[in-house]
Length: 338
Image 1: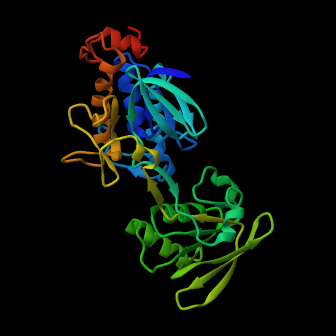
Image 2: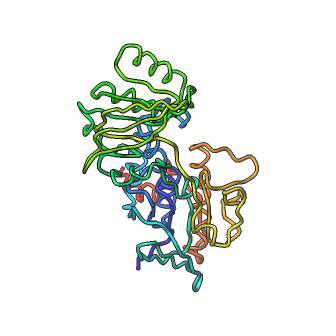
Image 3: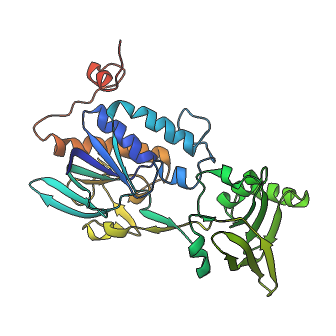
């Protein structure tokens, strides 16, 4: 049993900053995430994509933002539990007993749901033969781009992820970009870059085509793509990448007695607590009048939710608001020596 003050569900930027704010006020926390890495959608969807609306940071990538947030919470020794999905909650003697899908258990005073828009998983190819190549030569995200060097890659999709990776990998690989429509949903500058690379023979663009079949033994060898009008092309391919977006699911949260509104959790704006005492929700998953789905809004929500947790974690103490610039206690918690 893992016993701590607060359990944060979700290791994206909002959850990481909430952990920082909990540490500042002297509360311990642990973080659970169903992904295999920290960073949430920032890492899963756009690790190399520039972000322009973080205060005082003119530009950073999702990976840079995540790394900086991890650096910021280092003094608090936050423990992460990845590849874990919270399944069950039970209230007992003013504490929450939480259990994950793998059987890991937690005893906490409060819970902060910072799970973005819930659990998410990639939309997959409908062609059944694709399943046997998943994780070996067919991927829905990229962890190590070096494996594609000097190989032939077939990328499916028309959004930012597909376009960005097609552009990036065209520098070192033979790239086929296949999209089921003529139009793209990615940035116009990226679309133009793709068209330029196609004209220059640096990648091959196929529009109005979809996956028809894939063949190979242990690894992919060839694929067949089918045009809207019925024409079928066969392409050599060492790897397949599919970028069709994510399927968003609230999952077990639906059974926790929370007020759900259009797949979001309703909260108050005083401390972002839900209708269930001791459970808070921040980030894209929470809703309230005037809600903006921005990372900076999630930071604000996380700061107030952390302070809302205090009365459950330390009911006999009064929380004093202190500035980190002047509070010796806060500076000690941050490991600042003067």
